[in-house]
Length: 416
Image (cartoon, rainbow, N blue to C red; front, side, top):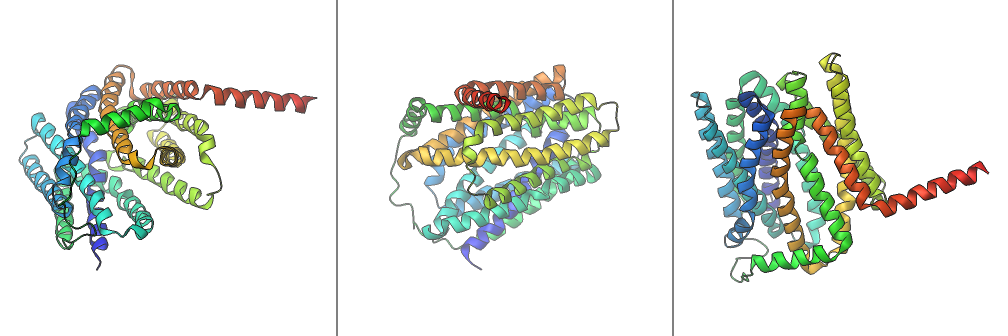
């Protein structure tokens, strides 16, 4: 078996484990606190440390063999999950333990993601990067496809401690597989690492974003999306499906599965229609994406008198549609950045983009959690996405104005 195959197997195991926790954890916290605002506060507190430590982690990772960092990260996750599973088995549901556990898991998951990405680059020849990136993308999607359903099923039947025990086993297996990867890599050791100031890189990347209007526009749109709608998994979806409609937690994972189906279908659609310039329709896709979320919110408001499973079936349909449109937005957005950002600063630009997005998500979760507690998760969902539509229309007002004038002109000519 080749080195990259070992990495793929390990990544599948860790990705599967990593996809279970974000779905099950919000259900457990909501059940424990009985409050969307406290749930939002919990995930804000637990996510911020990993985000703030990201720059320091990158510097630390560069100093060591990437295989060792990857192995250390995944093994630490296994140990953390084992300890937390034992605490839960003995009835230790202390909130402070859960906070510490979530913070440490977020930190080492981030470290695992960063180190495994670099390890992937080291193990793959440059001429085969595109090929293996495609394989990695397919495996990642397949790995996380059934994770939410399995996680919520185990949680509903056996409890949260059993879910954490399964994660511990998966991480142990991932660590064992990592151990079989040979130490040598195509880049050799780290003897000639050039020490560079993170602050300097940050300033250069920030200056480029600030001075390039098109880049700044998309950058701010991504921040807006992350603030207003990235909390769906932690706050709005559980708030609607579990707290309002009292659906069984064992089937809640179907929401993530439905979204994944849409993602996969969208990927196939893009691959078969490569001649379509999706970037030209990015503003419409942004608006359409938020309109689907608005429809989910309105469905929740108006179908409350119906059977809960009627609403849930409609929600699953919208989640498939949402996953489909989301990829139609993300792919042209990424392509735009790759084509417009100079190659020599792309790494720091994407690092800054990731850092900023990850920093704003916890703030969005905190805001959404408190608002959802006050007016309801579904109404919050509607308001947030209407705000996104307003922001998109403001950002693309010239393009939208030209399109509207062209539409009116076409109608006028047809009427003559």
